[in-house]
Length: 136
Image 1 (cartoon, rainbow, N blue to C red):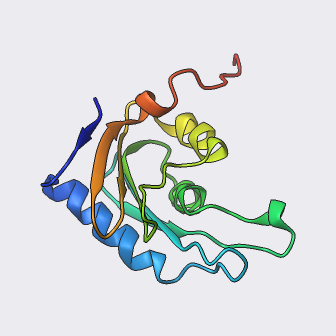
Image 2 (image 1 turned 90 degrees about the horizontal axis):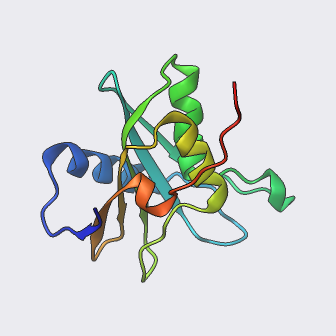
């Protein structure tokens, strides 16, 4: 359920702080739109990522996918919660591609989107109710 959140739980506040900090390391010389993401894997570890742009725009990696790649490289496969932080005036939701990638690792994760002025907590399935699923 979507809710504006004046007070985050400690675990979500930790993710927002980590996303905010890693945002400073983003490489965005073209858009100047810095994004940080932090996720908690089901083993409790936190993984962070930032956007990394490329002159060939299709080679750009979003912060959310960057954090997921770090999680997978560390041997984890399940997300419990994820935070995305920008300085944008409005809250920036994950793009469609990131939504599909997040859904590969968890459909019931909590999502926090935040900027310096506000944050919003949602269930991930609220913003991506019907992902593509390949029959295995």
